[in-house]
Each structure stands twice: as C-alpha cells, then as structure tokens.
Amino acid sequence: MDTDSASDEEPPVPAVLQSLEDEKCRAILRALREPKSASDLCDECGLANSTAYRKLERLRDAGLVREYTEVRRDGPNATLYERDFTEISVRIDENDEFSLTVDRPTEEPEDRMASFWSEMRRES
Image 1: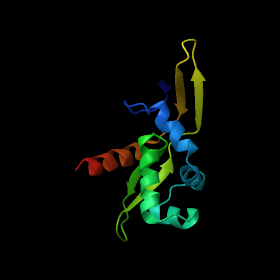
Image 2: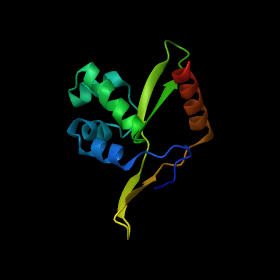
Image 3: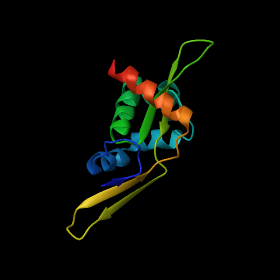
Image 4: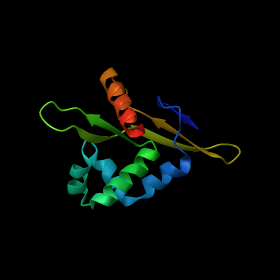
C-alpha cells in the first residue's frame, strides 16, 4: 500500500473503505472544508455527541482525519479536526490484491508542531 503520509503507519484498505461507505463519516468529511471542533460538527451534521466522536475516531484510525489542539490565549484550548487527504486512489494488482494511495495536503511547520503536541497529549 502506497501513501504520501509522513506517518509510519499506513491506513488499512478495509478501514478506509468502511469509513467512506459510512454515510455519517462522509457527512463529517464534507463538513471539514476547514478545521472544526466536534461540537461544530455535531451541529452541522446533525449528529449526537457520542456518534460524532465515534465517527471521528473511525476516520482518524483510517488516516482520513487529523486531530490537533489549538492553543488559545484568551480561553481554553480547543481540539479541532480536519481532513487529512486530498485524494484517495484504490487499485487492484495482477495478484488481485487491493492497495490504495492516500495523497495528503502539504503540511506547514506549524501544522507539524500542532500534530506533535496533539500526539503527546493523546499518549499521556
């Protein structure tokens, strides 16, 4: 499986396809034209809180959504979500094995730092 991700772990084909098959996951992906909080996604997509978090976790595990913490000087920090792909291609090879390529947006240095701190927070 090919991927242009900076991540060492590649999303499994079934996880990506199952996420794209899920209507609520697709609604979340459409809503993530720009970074949003889970609360904003609940409002925009008409989802219950628990459903939104479950779907965001599925999308994150499939490598389709990135979670990061926005540090705010004027109040509490916010966890935001954004799409983490620009294109997904599915192929089948001569051995009838499926593979996929996930093209990712170019990440700016400040975005990489935000990802780093989000991972540190998740692990602690």
